[in-house]
Image 1 (cartoon, one colour):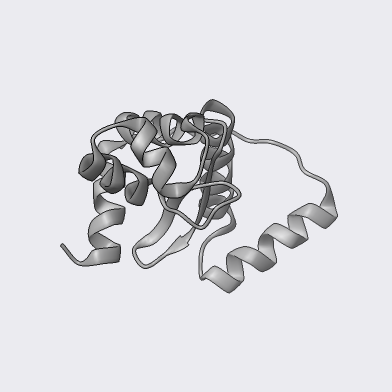
Image 2 (image 1 turned 90 degrees about the horizontal axis):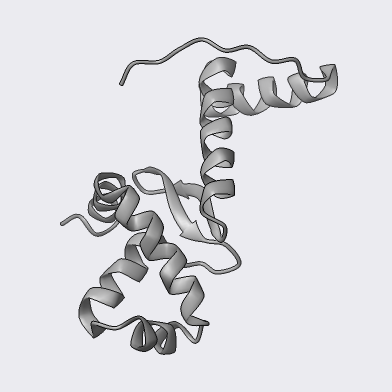
Length: 120
């Protein structure tokens, strides 16, 4: 995917923090900055969705829970309704809808995360 260069200013102590995290992950600071910025923008666009490290790299999950978005999609596929999926997780239906909105917008990413986790 084509990229563009944008710059921003951050406080020195935050730059040092970012540099340490990039070093720990064996990434360039600019790569980690881009990843964090993208993920934060997606979290703002899809409230309730967060990101964490998974078997295949970074994966989307439902914040406040240990459930990946691909897992919500799999359960919904099995049970067929948002209400039944919400009952399965003991969540309000809004959380299932939030996960599914993200899954719909990023089908390829979600499928890739699922395959990395289950090997299918």
